[in-house]
Length: 215
Ligand SMILES: Nc1ncnc2c1ncn2[C@@H]1O[C@H](COP(=O)(O)OP(=O)(O)O)[C@@H](O)[C@H]1O
Ligand SMILES: [Mg+2]
Image 1 (cartoon, rainbow, N blue to C red):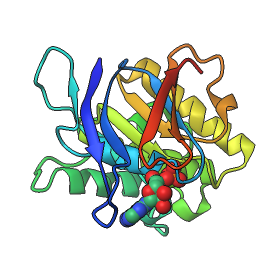
Image 2 (tube, rainbow, N blue to C red):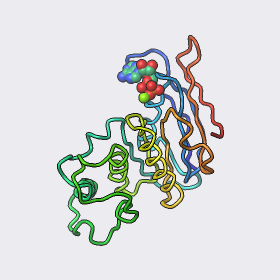
Image 3 (cartoon, protein in one colour):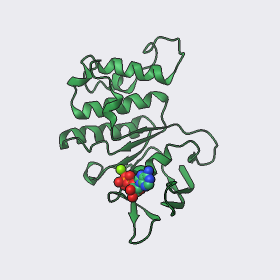
Image 4 (cartoon, protein in one colour):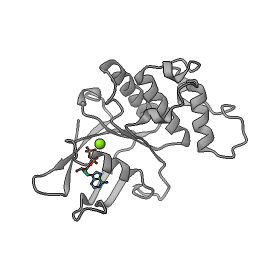
């Protein structure tokens, strides 16, 4: 289980709290789907989960590695370079001073699954392929919990399905827990390892309520 305990937050220029003493447990190796109206606080919640110590494992004190991919995932990619080169850059950033040649022993997720060609310039990849590459770059640092802010917002349905099939595979095969903000439920409907968190803004109240349910 992943535990969020007494999460409280307000913006420094605001009087009232957006979140107050929110506590919850979340299953691991699951896609937790975050929904809510615009301005309900989805992105703020995701960013808070990315802070060290905001979430812990049940039972043990081990550190959880989180990685966040913002809506602006394209800014992570160096377009004239290939997908493979971009992965290599991300590994170098993750392990500064690492003297082992990158790619020598470690097989990364994309190389293993080879779901698209790694040796063409990133600018020639589809939107879905770019998003998957950006996610894979973040996974280089042994991520336990992956936080995704509307990964399919800029994608058509075919690309969005491609990204979600990749995410489902991560959860089933790679021991990753995912929190994903997305407006379309259909991409995970009928996926066994999923739950839904709705963040709600009630009229005239700053404090948000959380509703956890099955998708
Ligand atoms: N830096 C900020 N200062 C004050 N209020 C903010 C700031 N950033 C966002 N907000 C407000 O916090 C609320 C939640 O925003 P956000 O988390 O971006 O919502 P969502 O991602 O669900 O659309 C909104 O009402 C937004 O206007
Ligand atoms: Mg948002």
